[in-house]
Image 1 (spheres, rainbow, N blue to C red):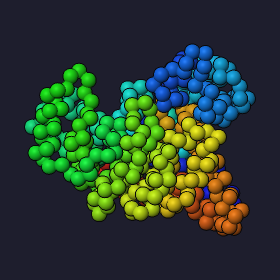
Image 2 (image 1 turned 135 degrees about the vertical axis):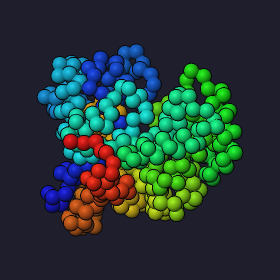
Image 3 (image 1 turned 180 degrees about the vertical axis):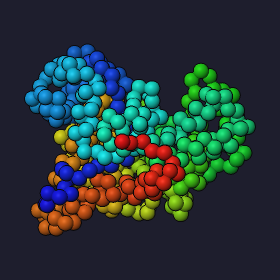
Image 4 (image 1 turned 45 degrees about the vertical axis):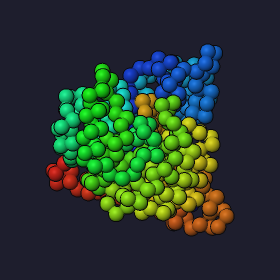
Length: 390
């Protein structure tokens, strides 16, 4: 393959990630950020004894000036020596990621916001709004059931002046087997009254009628709508996260102008590839799976290239907290895509120019088109909206 526009050299657009922390992390705090488990490793064991732990020691250690496969103890000591700020900047700036679409609805007080991420990474950054959190923030601020729908419409419109898209965690809160149709205003108002009346100190939205209302509000605005799919932490019921459960919702939303982005998708990435093939407004990635499958990520990336049109596959890291996950997400994705294309060249003599074109599509062109980034950048240049970035 030509050295131009290869997976190793092409810029990446990370269409779904979270902010990084610049804090100096102790060993247990760092380990908590390299697992989807809510619990520490059993006594006498470590979360470094995983695919992601081995990948950190193999690939991240040299970026910090260490030999590959130094011990976990030596790696963490070097991290403390350099400091969280320096570690994060080194790793982020080594990713080759040019644009970050950052969802800050989860533990936002612990991570950098888009403006800060843009500075740390030397890249552009745009916000993705979490629908459920936006509703919770309204209730925390004192919004009552009678005024909620109007207030939500107003704040969503305002956030979308600068945000690049929205995300739903329906998979976590109600599962993807929800009724796909738009709920009536009466149903929504009744559900809002029940939810707000029973809310205590912790405001958590898990009412299916209200979440369906939020989704359809996003559909009405022809948003790019991200859905968590598949693998996640212990709060998710994995069997209710199969994207095939969204089939009727996808049928109903096909003519609306909304685009549906299926995130992570493992172990349902083949199902997601099928949906991306049969529905014109569906895109998907395997971001979260890439880091956590490490040396096996090549196979998963290759499987995304089976059914799905090449213009429907996206890159994401889904990184949160530690910069190692951004770096590995980019490195393992580049490697896996290169190896898959090499196989196609070997088996069927795919032309180098076509491999370069597919690489660009998956690395950044698909996301740029699906999120209408060029329109956003034009609006920024003409002063219609603000933007983050250097």
